[in-house]
Image (tube, rainbow, N blue to C red; front, top):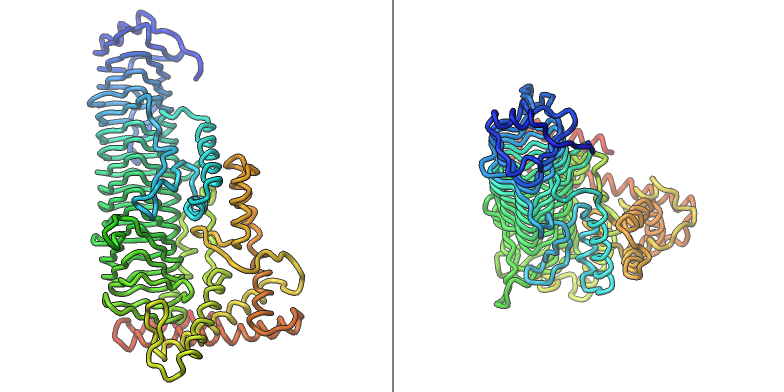
Length: 609
């Protein structure tokens, strides 16, 4: 609707009879087909634009009401066609509102000249007291945020990526003060300097200030009762509900913050679920979850993570302030009552139990149990490979991705045995074998980075790591053509950008392309990252060829070599399934599960062989 006219004298008379007033009736602009019938008890200030009010709109499932404006004060407002706006306790000031919106029982909606709408704010993640290392904007993904954090000390990269983000924000073709089409805002106290995109709903919130609610075309954002959001971005099917309180946060891609959860300077990506507890300076990557009131996530980087009740991270290791932080690599869990004193780095798919105060670094011992009583810390290397918990976890995550296909921005690789974890397994296996050789086979406990490993645990860890290595190689050999020469840059180090697995060399290429100005826009960066992700299979093939030759003793990759690797992999898989079955039967023998549950699980295991 681009053309407007002034009110006729007859229309002004009708509006005044309906209880309306205007600071200046000549500042009221209306659509050609405007009818004043449904405008009652409205006070107009400044410049006003209004569309038509000729349709019913749905205010609740199956309940429709006629559009119109009643009991409201408007100043410098644009109202699209067929909106229902009523019972505005204070005023709507400097807002452009789209078509067929329902805005009822709201106290104040206002924008001011200095508004940022939460876009472009820089926050400090992990190091709570550090300089800002992540820029909040609607297009942020877990992968890009992880890249920002990993390369925060690279001045050229940081300057370049901030310039790209700034340009991306400025290029957005929308009025930042706009409420989009088909938006519902009801029973809400205050909305200040907030952009609300099409189809979003705010119902019962206390205050939404300096925020952007950015929904995908099929994936709306929902803000529920008692919520306070400040300086934050909420995107693509995410929800903030039930008294949650967030400030300086990003909540994206079907994530949910609910039941009084509080968060500050934190990131939540792709199917994360946070309830009751609190987070500060936390990076919660894909599938991070916390359900309990007594849980504090602070100064930590997580993904595919589950927090047990009363999990507590401490970033005040000494007296220099909250400067410490740590990483729990993908798939790690913390048991109920666990306390991790940062700095600490925990290897992938591990489980932390007890009060761990000696700042362990177990990245070279993935799939481990890390257990402490506040004094001695014990590691049980590789034990989680053989547990029912891991078996269930690696199958549940792909099924629990509830993101709409068109809104899947963060790239998530679900492989549990991948070049990332295999590199760690190889390093861990070498470390265990070296300890055994150096300290001897009769040593009751071995020492690793200040932690203790029992002799039995060390022996079992070597065996489990060897089994996992053969299982990985066998599965890749069965699924890919390893006999054909291809890329070589999958060899060597790999990294995890919060869900995206890639060779370290490709991360360096990406960082250099941004730093040197080769990538000039967010579209360029996304295309470069998508290209890396699309070639995962080729990198994986190059990595596996190298592993077969350098770790599994093959002289060259031939058809007969591949057959042998696949056979070894099949045997390793049988061993793995057998270990998991033993773990399930052990749990049954403790009286923790019913026999029918055990039987169903074993049938599922047998179907895998």
